[in-house]
Amino acid sequence: MDVQWYPGQMAKAKRLLRENLKLVDAVIEVLDARIPHSSKNPDIRDLLARRPVVGVLTRLDLADPSATAEWVKKLHSDYFAVTAVNANSGDGVKKLLQLLKGLPQRRKHGQRPIRLIVVGIPNVGKSSLINRLTKRSAAATGDKPGITKGKQWVRVNEGLEILDTPGMLWPKITSERQAFGLATAGAVKDEILDPVQMGVELVGFMQNEYAQRFAERYKLEQAEGDPRHILNEIGRRRGCLVKGGEVDLEAAARLVVKDFREGRLGRITLEKAGESYDEDEVLPDDHR
Image (cartoon, helix red, strand yellow):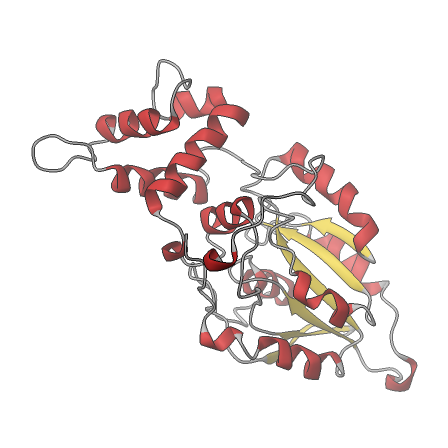
């Protein structure tokens, strides 16, 4: 598996962060509630250590509510404060604004608004969150990793200003599980994983964690069995066929992944707060 996907514009994101941290009082790190562990950026932890960091779980409407609650509890030890929001509906935004009002301001900046920087890996909803906080379309939004470019100050209210920055992610993904979560959630380009492999892994996950709703979605008599065979059956039922009536597994895989990303499989979280992520299988050097 080749995961050497690092886009050119991401290479300078870390340098920009160093420069921008000099301008702000605190940091909002945006995490995808479906993959809270994998969407944390370990590269920036040391850089952020000198500023209070608020962790914000987004994609709340797509994530399992009980799993999100567990992650908020677990992440409290890593942040100044943690909360979860739905940037589309506005759920949780009022609570976030209250948390931000309580942030300490550096003394030398006197009475000016508290200034924040928003950081996070691509496509976790940074721009959507800013748009919701500022109540206007302040930053470019979209479905593709890396759509927010450059930087801009945006006003939240009289007491808060936000500097939006491009998302950041390390150039080498270090475990199979991390690669699966990031690719399936759409945080990295689809090309880093074989689409059939991604589809088979997602089917296997759904069999283990959300079997009933998965069977209901695709009208399967049962969700048990070899994930590849199940994916093949889904492809047959959904008309993902090529000449001769053979199932197009890649088309079937893309269909299942698309259903996950758009919430058609229900509210799903790919990572559990109670699991250990310290012993993930490390990818060989030639696959990073």
